[in-house]
Image (cartoon, rainbow, N blue to C red; front, side, top):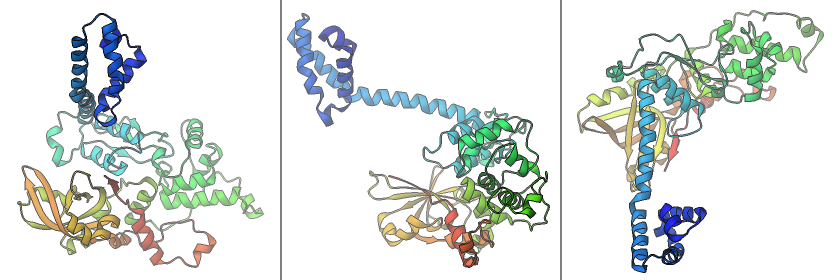
Length: 429
């Protein structure tokens, strides 16, 4: 740009056009439009035509490598900075990625899991502790508990904070409404009713917070908090009657001994509301059923010899079909121990298209490729194990059915819901 301005008399905008044309001259051809102006400008400024021609040829030559070189250097700097932060401060790195969603390759559940494996304590959304964004809180364990795969990093990790998930992680909440509630909570809320009256949240929003299990600091788990939230809706809504009006002045929730919610149902509800669960991985709760089907835990793949035949299974995280891979699909499955990288050749994909594209919990039979620590399973058969997810919850997922739903609710409805709540997996090309 400086050469064009000084030697050829270009204006700064014209020089910028030349810069942009250098990156695309083979595809678009716009640099040729500037060639005559460049050469004639240099001649007008007293340079020989041969020198002007050679100068422009050098600019064209730089366009062959200068643009990708500059971009490679720029991205390398970003990668190095990101890798440094992730290595030394995985709590900061995870919070930043979650606050930048939706983006990138990995979903929130995988970002949280990786942070936990690097010793970061992750805390659930809570009405008394969370902000809209994901935040760092003091009080994490002084010595991080690393996963055995990362134990050699214990001297490198400098994190001292816990990661508190924010309200942005909960499906269906409005930032402006939650920001007003946060501003009003002061030293904290002491009841669901206090959140309603002082926090100014609508009963519908309080129900969503209850669905997300965000009232634990009040001593209420998901089902109890949802019961209290439904009571607010009756007192303040269209069902206001003398009986409920008399109860409107109560300062505490009515105490009922509701049956405890099974862990599996908690996990399903967490995925429905947060797209992740801090309580357990679905595959861990299904491990007995998976073991009966001869499924190998993903963390054991690294110890399997090259060429061995295995069956692995897990939630489908990612499907990739790069344009340069001749139709090969790369899948990533996750169980409670690790991830498994799957290679699906085009002929196998054509036979098991439905399983590849629609399974939430997928099982793969194939041959292990284990070369210098890089492990893949080359698939020759795939199975849709998604129906097993119904075993996570035997009760209906929603505790707020409409009247029309009551007559047709059944265990079958719960099975369908449990399967569809789990992530579909992200597709990339």
